Image 1 (cartoon, one colour):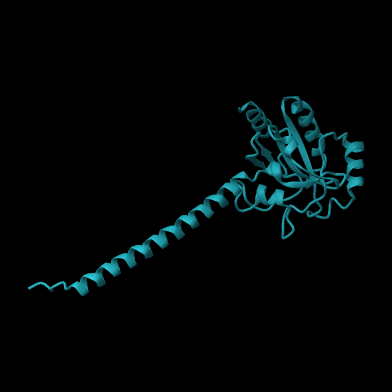
Image 2 (tube, one colour):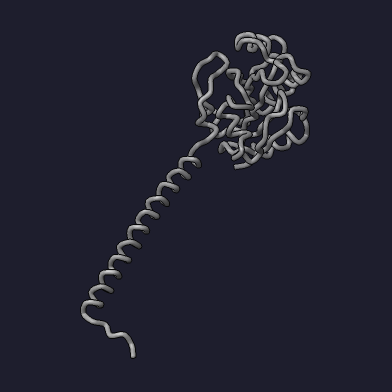
Length: 208
């Protein structure tokens, strides 16, 4: 015979049922809250853009890359005393060639590779303008690797980048699309006027 449900047992079961339901609802509420927080964090990460990262220009003035939103840019870590320094000429050439189409080269001096950029910002600016007639924008000297890596390079070469990994030497290059997406990475010895660089720039400029 089945166990007889007495009024007392019925009340106990009813209490357990409501207690269990309340526990489930509390858990669901907590999960919904956690899911909401996750979505907010995800949205914040997606909202972050290369264009919003704080930088300093070559004169030490606080700025960002917002002026280049909607443009294609080639970001390069540069140095004045490197065997690759003559790449300044090629960088200036492509900057001049494509700037009217919405392109810019952006140079970020760095002294992490063989101490080949030891000068002050003023000395770097003077060298670039007199030796290579550089007109493209230059910025404050930064670290591109290591514990003091600039936030720009955390985004360009950090673990969440589509092209992660330490910068190998002076004149590493990152091509950025109009929307701030990292399109391509070129290693230091790839010349600015190499067919793969020019082809990628032209494709990015043609993209809507």
